[in-house]
Length: 151
Image (cartoon, rainbow, N blue to C red):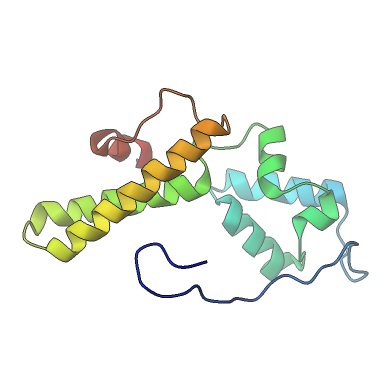
């Protein structure tokens, strides 16, 4: 698939190996992994960062293989999930930072285009998440409200 805002083709990347069972060298059981996920979330880690920490520091290659559910599902079960999905929250943080830059650099037209593209991605994601009932139907993106969401 092509890139959205450039005239280039997509970049092929690496993929996870297709493995259906937990590797023999993983020492952690399902309950221990769930406790680690909850502990890391209480330390203010995002779900993606939780997976990275579990892989690098604890030697757990995939939470889904060990527990049978993803990090986000475990967080939802323990009522530690965030109001917004992680990808949308990251885009909103980026838009807030670029908006702060635009207040001091009013003539930076290249960054203004990047801000418009980022906000367009946020609106497109919001449309998707409204359709899948992750966001309420009356949710909308607003620059002033985005500052409050990030803080």
